[in-house]
Amino acid sequence: MTTLDTQDANRKELGKDLETIASLVRTVEETPDPIPAEVEGTIPTWLNGSLLRNGPAKFEFGDTHYNHWFDGMALLHKFKIEKGQVTYMSRFLRSDAYKKNSERNRIMVSEIGTVSMDDPCKSIFQRFFTRFEMIKPTDNGNVNIVKYKGDYYLCTETNLIHRVNPENLETMEQVDWSTFVAVNAVSAHPHYDPDGTSFNMGNSVGGRGATYNIIRVPPEKEDAEDTLKGAKILCSITPVNKFQPSYYHSFAMSKNYVVFIEQPVKIDIMKIIACFVKSKPLCDAVYWDPKQNTILHLINKHTGEVSPVKYFCKPLANFHQINAFEEDGFLMVDLCCFDDGRALDIYFLQNLRKSGKALDEVYNSMSRALPRRYVLPLHVTDDTPVDLNLNTRPSSTATCIKTKKNVVFCQHEDLHGDDIHEYGGLEFPHINYEQYNTKPYRYFYGCGFRHLFGDSLLKMDLKDKTFKVWYQKGLFPSEPVFVPSPNALEEDDGVILSVVLSPSQDKGTFVLVLNAKTFEELGRANVPVNMPYHFHGVFHASA
Image (cartoon, rainbow, N blue to C red; front, side, top):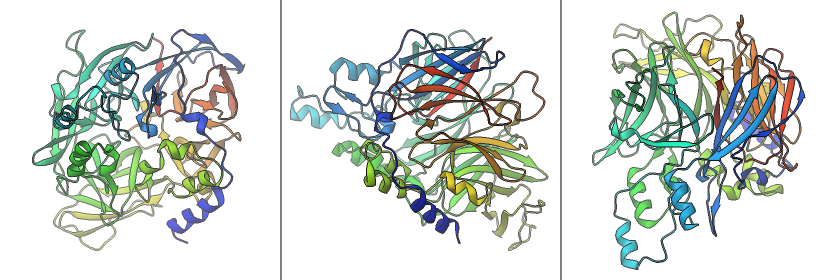
């Protein structure tokens, strides 16, 4: 049975009588003053800091409503953990989008799935000419909370980010990437070297089409007001089609290389212009082209040199990479892979708010994300033989075959057994990043997806491709965050933190603390609030 056949069989088996999750995509109020949580069990006393989480939490203004989950206004959550106790607070990001929408009590700034409403006070001629003003992207940073030069920023995938105060969650200032480097959009998933140097990717779009750019940000501030000063474009890469570049949500990084995954989820630039003129949502310009293979580009982090060797593989869609590391002349790239790129279409709010058979049909229409490894040979030359598997790593089933000059075709190996299909695959991967990013590693963590949102937590063991599970029926855990214990000796010495939501229980939210080694529950902190399912976050350790 092929991978696709297995996925089809498991779709039919899993996607049946799904619980409604409509309450996980409804607007909530912010909680600007800290409130105490009720702790059950035991939270380790060494765990001191704040779990910061970010995601959409306001889905309408007045009688205007957003269409897509990704459109909602950013809400920053803080779970402060200190001496075994927990408090909670949250604040909406005071972005320009939030402020403009609030001032007029209607949607005034377009998001990826929703077009802003025309001002009824404008004449038809004013509305027409407004369409030809310069497109200003949203600054609704609802995807991630990231760090540059020691400061925290909320970001989406445009060039506009916001510095925030991790103590009181106040919005401090908007920062425009394009002030420092020539980009129109930047990913929400940077990578970090041990010294704090940051790497990210951004697109430049102009009259001649698009260019992919690798960005390097130095680790130190020049002064107290410094944000992204010193950011530089390390290199630029030309898309296969400059007017139909790939969409990317993240990239991979090893000790010496940045790996850009040019996937067949495409953005039609001409359609973006048409969407703008015709008042259509920008997501209409994103499409999946299964006739195109995926290309992995290697960039030397130290010199900015782009490898002339291109690594091809079958069409895949990737949101999140797991890890990448170099060993014995090979570069291992571990990714969560979909076999089609239509996930964006699934997460419209009208789909997430369905129930019964209609909800089952939505779930069964999407593919599952599965963890896979690609093995890339680093020393391919003109003398390297063609039509021969270059992967000499013992016990690895991945293949990498040079088909012609500077072209290597790669076939992945699975980082899982067949039993992962019973949990709907795995997404929102997390590792012991501080100690094992860019290095050989054994464990990673993620959410199982037997629903449209994660409904279990998984710990994967790469030694034998087995996994441990935390699952409780009717509960939906967020992306797991690994926090190492003090003086940890082993890779999985620490805890896993996850915010768990209940769509059927009012104010049934809690922070879950698992022993990362055994995956057994240590404790939970019940927080008397409702919150929508959210995207990403970090643990901010106390000084």
